[in-house]
Length: 119
Image (tube, rainbow, N blue to C red):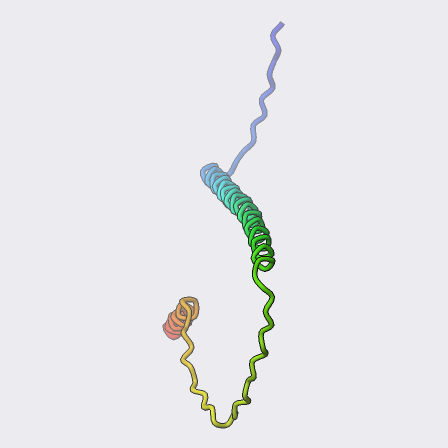
């Protein structure tokens, strides 16, 4: 005896739009996975570099202890610092260097103001 298969049909309105939405969702998911992998690899590299840095610091501490044990013990006299008259020192304002982000924000605000004036 043959096994009879039952078919079930569903009416889909705008199948092209549905397919496009599914493909866009798949693309967004793949972009998210790509970003996750990038962050994961950066985290692994950061952990490795941190471990290497810690090892270098430990080596520096060991070498510093060896150097201090070899060097003679010498007392260093404390340096005498004369007080400076605050009124005699003139402070000049320093021009603040603007970052690229500040420049872009200013340009964006100018463009937005032009757009609002056009409306």
